[in-house]
Image 1 (cartoon, helix red, strand yellow):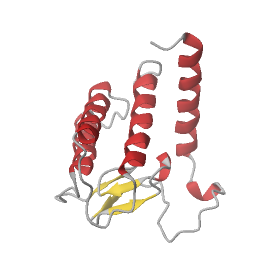
Image 2 (cartoon, helix red, strand yellow):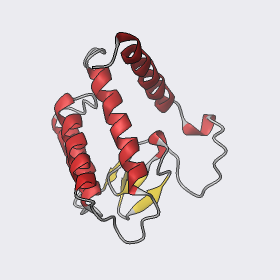
Image 3 (cartoon, helix red, strand yellow):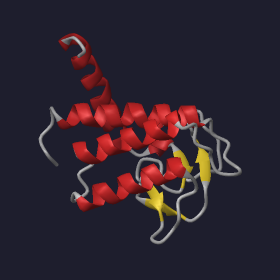
Image 4 (tube, helix red, strand yellow):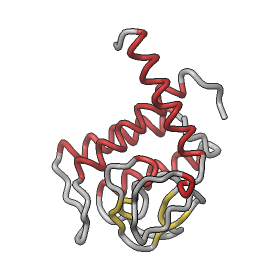
Length: 154
């Protein structure tokens, strides 16, 4: 268990990240010049994507991994890691879109950990290092689990 000071620091960092994610990406000068839609409106994907692999608020991996990003209804995931994200999306939806739901977030961490342990293969055409994607997902879910214990339910 982390000491209280470290725990509070992590909580503050995750809170700042959540605040940053609430603003339009267009207001931030990220120095990114890409032909990728950076809208923070909920989007669905019909193609396997791999961009912003190590940038939590912008991550697009497969059809289901990324903030406010998921596969269109009926779309099959691109690989086993994408399947983890698809299951997480379905779980969050079943919990009234409670993105801080501990069960859903812990299940995603377990699934991603299993993918890593089994050295799962990524989809053809992927340009992301899956280790980077796993790290982004893990840090994001750890922050959500920490926030879930400290913030009121949405």
